[in-house]
Image (cartoon, rainbow, N blue to C red):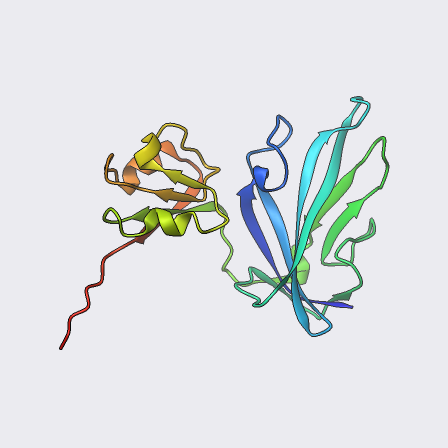
Length: 208
């Protein structure tokens, strides 16, 4: 049985799961369930994809999920009010009292329902209503780009593009020194996001 430890609601890029299209916003909600099974921790992430049925006659929905083993629980946005143990994160149509993650399994007219029943959860006040974008600033040749590109995040480099092509789908903005700019400039370009400034400084060791 899977014992639910908590839930995170992430604002992520649609492209993390499927190619952006006319049916889905570029930024979507991802429900990430953290659970314990056989003494190990796991994460299962789910999003709802909108589209057309295979005949093109009507709309359709699918649940796309990604699961993996994890080492740490991390920050939880919600924790269950009461103990929850389930065999599967997927549910039947009536859900399990805490969430619904249902698909009708119809090949021709697929439909799905993915939603949280918030009355069953305690809000830890650590979730964010908007997507967060990290802004790396600091001197040249200090490792901003090196660190950014050693993550799984989508990175935008101002030294390469200025502000051309910058939008809300990026996770990290590396501000170079070819085109100096501040957070106020970025706020004029980006909307409905939270900018987090990460300042890089050189630390000089001094022998005593």
